[in-house]
Length: 159
Image (cartoon, rainbow, N blue to C red; front, side, top):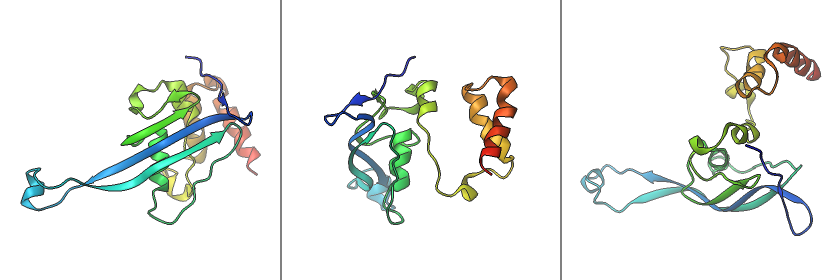
């Protein structure tokens, strides 16, 4: 599948990501008899409520806020690790509010999350080089014979 270019906005820039009233609610499960039998009033934690913004092509989005305000849930919902409860999200012109399994591999490859704390997100069972190589191998962006040299090149660039 060929991914489209971003759509032009009124000011001439192109938007690569568009959110319109994106929501993510989690059901609250109570312990009363009414709740156990599904007779109680349904309650929800509104982790993300009405997120609306556009991200122009070539820009960087930083999501900042106090602990527990929904930053991680917002990003997880955008990249497909969580299902949206409501609203719409488009990435490069594709609707990304549906199930992650409905997305093609090229789209998944283009939309990835950068974690704020690599100490808690890097897997200590693997070397840094193995973790850098994994997406290249998984998505086939680098020929198999060149993966090691590409990893070495990237590691040298970090010095």
